[in-house]
Length: 178
Image 1 (spheres, helix red, strand yellow):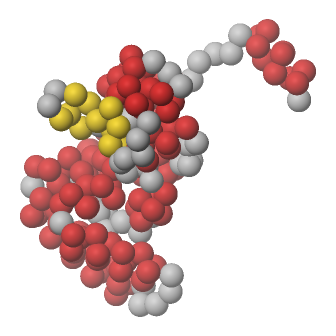
Image 2 (image 1 turned 120 degrees about the vertical axis):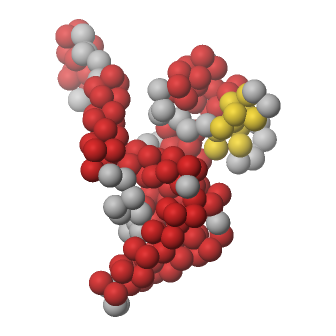
């Protein structure tokens, strides 16, 4: 398999050691972000690899879901949302005149200067740099409170979908191996 940043469904299935249908299901459930190019799904290699070795805890996943909702707002009205982010960035700089936060605020500045595509990548990626970048996000207040609650409820529901009861014999076998 080639080492490129965008993968086909089949290439993602090979990486995940699963079927293409499983990859499509992950996409449709919102667990694997994708774009459609010429009628075919393409997903970023970093997002597929994040499924192999989940680097995000529950809080980071929750933040990712919220930022994906913000990404939707950017798609609808990029100028207004990016202007609000710039205002928030200036406010954050005043609130944190020194310290480690400045490094991340400088990075956000650079991302915002690169334009909409770079911002969307930072908001929706599962890559480690994006996870760390979202911790100092200038997109606070972009989502209305009811939108925020809807996203968090959908996130909670998605986590419940993934939880399956473990048969007692499997549980017993697992305990014996420890």
